[in-house]
Image (cartoon, rainbow, N blue to C red; front, side, top):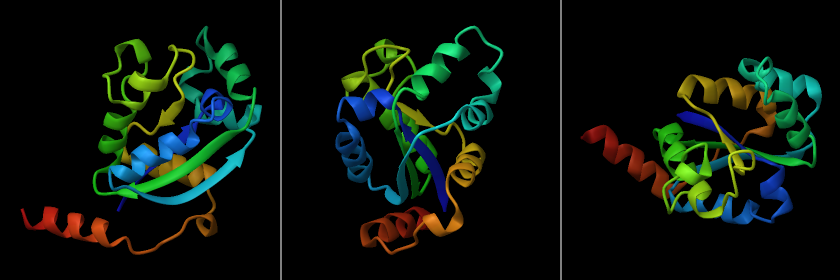
Length: 154
């Protein structure tokens, strides 16, 4: 089953939007399999944002991501990466569709509330880098099982 990582960034925590973010993902039918609050250190941020470390904006991104705790979440579902990316919206909130989390709630490009994995492979790797296996939970979600079974028949 596909997994993805969501990081509710400091602006989401500070603005009290964690419940709204979780609600939208649950309403989509995705399954929350892991969640914790954490403060991210320089080493974790450099690893997670490795492709951005040498870019001009990285220092500000790192400072922002260390400004308060974040909420780390592992979500699971059928084609969940694509579903989450659609729910989250474009990286720049000014370009995000109304109805998306960023389109409705985010303030600007530097404060876009959420990180979401960009592919199934990245999702698996990111979940593994932020969660130990014993921090992830497996349980039945009846509506989820039926959706997956129905998609396999078509």
